[in-house]
Picture (cartoon, rainbow, N blue to C red):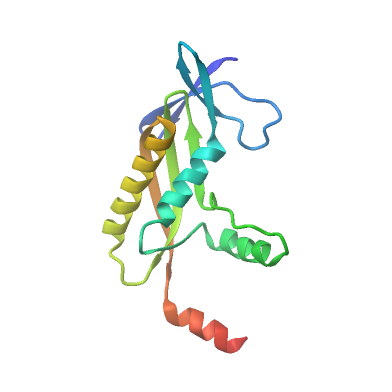
Length: 157
């Protein structure tokens, strides 16, 4: 396997190798010791980050409007499961990772404070569970959830 390095918004995330046949999640992290290596797929980091972001009060959902609409349809199909990595994209390197989140916030929540809380929870969760250094967490607020819109939709149905 060959080593590559990716530049990302002023930071550098080191990458190592590609695992064939692993679908979209081809980048893996290498955690080495004298007793062996541990590989962590980028999909694992994305799920951890997605769960950590949703744990913060004021985050209504993750993902863009189209992704949320598709997820709503998928969940109504028998056997459909929610995608906890929806709205999350990650780049995983040998020792570092970077996370991008697209979130929908509840109306009335201070967005700057919410973003700081989400960023801190994502960083602590990913670093604690994977031993990877999180070099950045970029947050895009794509929408704001207003409660009366849900009530209007229910009345129309």
